[in-house]
Image (cartoon, rainbow, N blue to C red; front, top):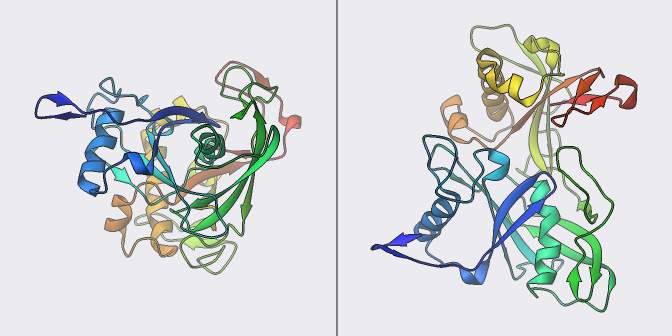
Length: 297
């Protein structure tokens, strides 16, 4: 961050968790002033950037690569650390605390061990109890420690991430109802969402670990097998998805109206669901329909 023409350094670690990356700060290294924290986070990521590339910071031009995590002492007796997730906008100066990130949750236990936020008793499997301050939920993180540090090498792989690494097991303890209205905040497994100017659309509104809305791909004129690039360039589909997402936000009690739902960008997450079909991964690997049971984007 630049202050009066001079750079200000703040200790941090750049980590990958699952299919996301984030800058991870210790709570004790950050100022208490929220406005100053905001400036640090935006500067570290290189946001806002109208070019969408974040070349002035460590962001990667995608929401999954524009994240901040904060780890600190626990505020609950059943936790070893507190973990706060912050979603940073790419083109806009958004600093959003409304959602959690399961991918980066997998990095918090190893970070806590490596940064000595928790003590470990020898090598082997260890567990760190994480309190997600965004959701008020507890997650148990299990992974292996070698020579007092979290193990990083291993044979686990994830489609979308090159190479292999050490595995991390996450147990989400009582994950339902992060916004206080239960697992099904609309009161039913299937809800009809009224979208202005269109026929109602069926959706499942679920709040477990994060609030999410699930819709059938065919109801949006999609196959469900589209690549990320195909979805991003399909402006009509993306606008419809956002319209449905906003309607779901109001129905779930996250926003009071559609205008507020537009401002709360990180939740609910929206997913399109379809039957299995043959498709290719970003790396060109062919996945046959019989290899899986349901397709989600």
